[in-house]
Image (cartoon, rainbow, N blue to C red; front, side, top):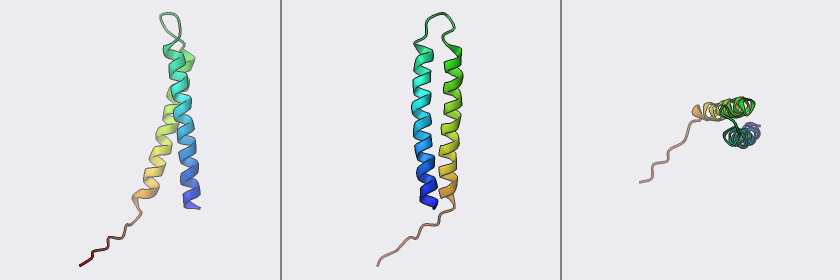
Amino acid sequence: MKSLIDVLLGVVGVGALAFALYHFYQFAAGTGPEGNKPHLWWAIGAAVVLCVCVLAIFIRHSGAEEEIHITQ
């Protein structure tokens, strides 16, 4: 179950990254002196979702104890 949640967080994070890049491009390519502000807000929101997903993945794995095998 833990790996399923990690995969879901990864998929949502990659989707948010693509969404943020698309909307930032739409903002940057906009005409006019101010660009398209709604696209900028969508890009910022998607970037926040991406950061939350990445943080959740790292927090879930920070308590994992790794076994170190020392061979002689």
